[in-house]
Image (tube, rainbow, N blue to C red; front, side, top):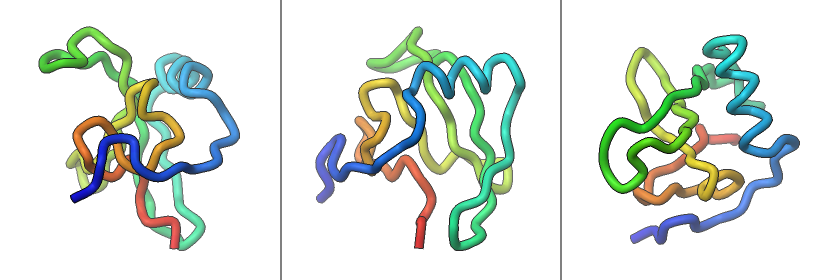
Length: 89
């Protein structure tokens, strides 16, 4: 079983900078090094322990597969023990 916030990634930008950019410009289509496309978008969490917090959601085919709160930024697994980022293979 994976632990919350397990694994570390080197990211170029801090959470707040990315969140602000996504909030201003809208969802961004991105691609991993291996060519996997995904969407990143800024939201405010509506329920649960992070209710009211800023979150960056990662989407593929219209479905959320991961999310990162500020406390999860730069970690491979988020508070819910799900992967934040697509396979960087």
